Amino acid sequence: MILVTGGAGFIGANFVLGWIAATGEPVVSLDKLTYAGNLGNLASLAGDARHGFVHGDIADRAAVQRLLAEHRPRAIVHFAAESHVDRSIHGPGAFVQTNVVGTFELLEAARGYWMELAAEERERFRFLHVSTDEVYGSLAEDDPAFTEETPYAPNSPYSASKAASDHMVRAYRHTYGLPTLTTNCSNNYGPYQFPEKLIPLVIANALEGKPLPVYGDGRQVRDWLYVGDHCEAIRVVLERGRPGDTYNIGGNSERRNLEVVHAICDALQEARPREGGYRALVQFVKDRPGHDRRYAIDAAKIRRELGWAPRESFASGLAKTVRWYLDHGAWVAQVKSGQYREWLELNYAARSAA
Ligand code: NAD
Ligand code: DAU
Image (tube, rainbow, N blue to C red):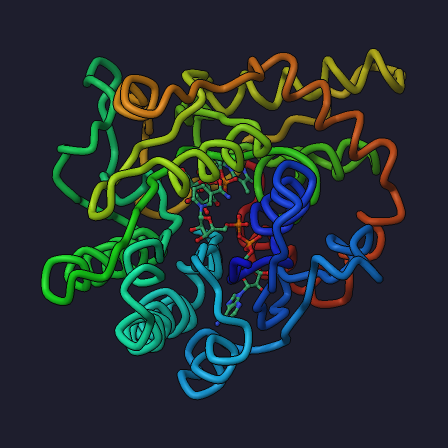
């Protein structure tokens, strides 16, 4: 079996569901259930003997040690993190605690467990660390895309904390020989994404007739990848990646934020027409401090060495995503708790129309 941290979050839940469907191999998910964790994301696995859930913190080394001793996984796939850049600006402490300290504690527990394994199991064991393209910093319009050789230059507390965790993973490989793999991926979108991130936020606001907040001039570029493609890439890296290596994962779908917002508006207009159209709801607001201008991933290595390429185009992935949110109004309503409203107030109240 494998252990997945952060399995109740957006990408983690998509990964767990996809893993069981694709391989049938049992999974235990370890998740602290922060505001971003939602057991409802895994509801379709209720009663399925191939999935177990443990409520806990990756920073609790003793608890992780017990879990490893009990379940004896052949791999750990590590998603658990604080993941939202705007929240890291308002409160960086939680990012250092989970992303840096938590990853360190998890690595320590994994190292102790791995060292005690029999030779064959030791050889087979993998620790796969899921990271982000944001560790490479910001690109100018004409710069080449990030490769695995691009120097780290993180700009936000979120990306700095992820960069620190990547460095710890690298050090555990180099110093102790732990068989690690690191993936650095671009912006994901798809089912179960918490509506604090651009795409689900815009869909949710549009359906309520609320303003669609576009930071700054809306010309920042992200490289969008459908979450199912990311999950498939992780499965491929876990099975065939070279221990100690890092793999960049991207969608080859660079879009300006305003283009993304307009594409969502147009997809919604087709599915659920609104008088005056959804584009009329776009509102330019005060920019994110230190906002990275452009991210782009060069995914040539994973394509060349492991044969992975995304299946979805931005158009097909976005159409699926919009459809999913239209069909899952109850899920959206459930995650929009009081806490979520407090976040909207904190992040957007001071961002009056620019
Ligand atoms: P998310 O915020 O939706 O989910 C994070 C999950 O981790 C939640 O279920 C949360 O409860 C859990 N968690 C947080 N702190 C924990 C702790 N201390 N112990 C145990 N569980 C804890 O995040 P996501 O968007 O699914 O991202 C998952 C991973 O992928 C993160 O490491 C993120 O940096 C990385 N990543 C995300 C993207 C993206 O576009 N979303 C892109 C590249 C990489
Ligand atoms: O690049 C990978 C990263 O992508 C992941 O590591 C992060 O976990 C994930 O959150 C994401 O980071 P971004 O900051 O790029 O994602 P976000 O959805 O917050 O914002 C996408 C872009 O849209 C960014 O340029 C900011 C802008 N934006 C965002 C929000 C929430 C707006 O213009 N308005 C908004 O209200």
